[in-house]
Length: 109
Length: 115
Image (cartoon, rainbow over all chains, first blue to last red; front, side, top):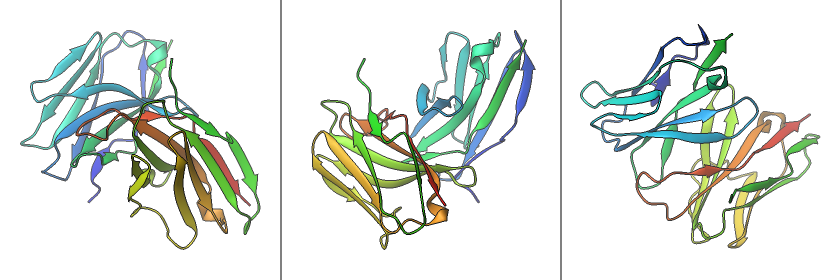
């Protein structure tokens, strides 16, 4: 079983739509959770951290379900500029991060 | 706007040749990571340095890969000899302390093609 699993997509959604991604992780000792965003031929960049209580940043909402070992990302009112690959990232130790392979999102005019 | 820099951005070489990739972490960051990204495997950690000391290189093929930090402003990843299966994007990332849950800042990557 892969450590961090994501649906690779692509998710093709119209502008203004709401889209949700899920991610599951296998290491129950994981303690830190993130979503990174990677544009085509660019480096990954932190989008947001994911906290146990859930957190929101503008149009983006992240949630964590420790019991089921999954993380979600919800994007409301999608913009063309949201088109990217979204990487689910899980940390179990002080520095080690395990990256999912990413979910590709294309927002269509 | 502080950034991690990497050189070269693109490298095409022939099998058997030596490849050296360089990274300048963000000034003041004490941790450096080397990752490799491929379509098949995604992002994989190759090596981790804290305060210039290599603390984890378990993800790196030891027979051909080596990573060093000659000083606090330079990290290098070397492949000798290179093989076609080494073709990938190699990212360097840095962090302030390597502490739990800390953000890692990625450089633009070196896109390597070994023919």
